[in-house]
Image (spheres, rainbow, N blue to C red):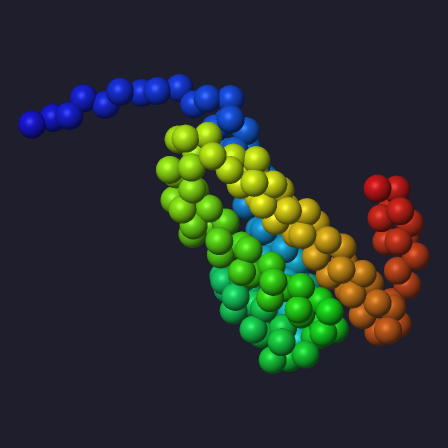
Length: 159
């Protein structure tokens, strides 16, 4: 027996929710990428661009949790950044694995919608804060390694 599928258009709230979830997932991916780059530059210390690219390809396959563990084991960040990464991982896991499924009933009944969207927006905000912290850390690392970062800082200040 074949079931007929009835397509129901998403409500305005659902579209908004999906957009916020998508934005949060994108910012999570940026954090994962920043971690991968940071680990390659601070731990692997490649001598050539091609070596760095190979290392980066390997590290980009790691889960966020594994990348955070490597960062902690290799002590590449301050305790503040490491603590924020651990908090972020918990929220990321909630976003990816539970945010929609755990709230399906509430969504259908219009309960706690604002609270859900605000929690998702907070993940996006936290990701942006982490990106800035990792960026600043990488600039400090490069300067400590004797690199002139004035052009980079000048570009960043434009945004």
